Length: 166
Image (cartoon, rainbow, N blue to C red; front, side):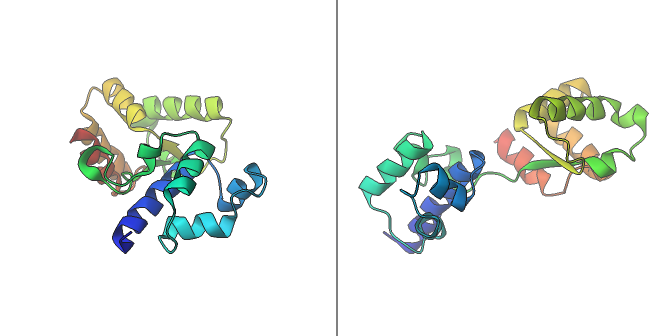
């Protein structure tokens, strides 16, 4: 296995693990020691080759089809997911209510549903951005620019929106 392929495979493994909210030690705990944190970490970094058998077992552990772990199986062959859309809730609180009211209510609803009240940041999905764009009567890319100008979204969010519009 080429080192580039191993790194792409590792990026997929890491993406699946983090989507499931697991740390490396969380994987070891959840698997009752079957998957050692140091081994999974070395797979994710591409430092250690993973056999087909072990990859199938990891896919089963994560509850995903094996092909989801293979590089080049996402649209466009992207090895890593697009940047996350993270709202800065502290900055959002300083945006005038007449501009940010719908976003503030939407964010509060997501926080309530998730039971996530850290008050600093909130990750949102592409679907959330599309919904907000409808609420604001703008395209997702125009809304993204507006949120960036308010300081609520990082400029890196442009890449996530461009990735989604491809």
